Length: 147
Image (tube, rainbow, N blue to C red; front, side):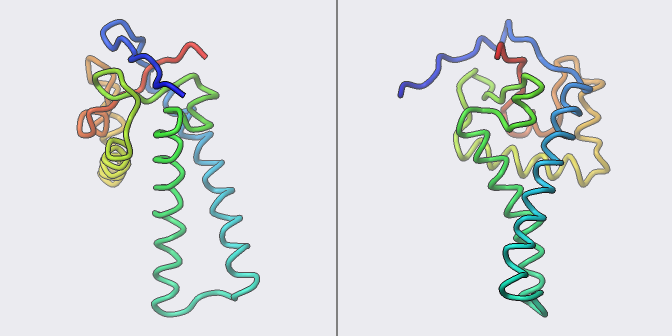
């Protein structure tokens, strides 16, 4: 399988805040279902973890699963399921598909955008290029896809 042709960033249509919000909402529902399934599959046979195991379990649920969910989808096709439904695609600033390093950097930068009371996401509303902080920090961006 050959790599897809780079996207012409200069002429790409950049999605606005509401489209991104729709994709985030859709993905959060899918992620919540995945986390609930993980809780069930782990706690039914093993019981609820205690002590340090509980801390690791919480880290696994709330950071490892989202990390694998987002980076996996971004590297393999540039779209999560929510992004596909809202016709968004993640690309690097040069228009090429993201690498694992790009996806990891974006995920960590998105966490920063989130823990600052969401200001990194709201930045889209004032940025002339409709880029969030994590777009800038990871040298990636969302574009409107044709399919």
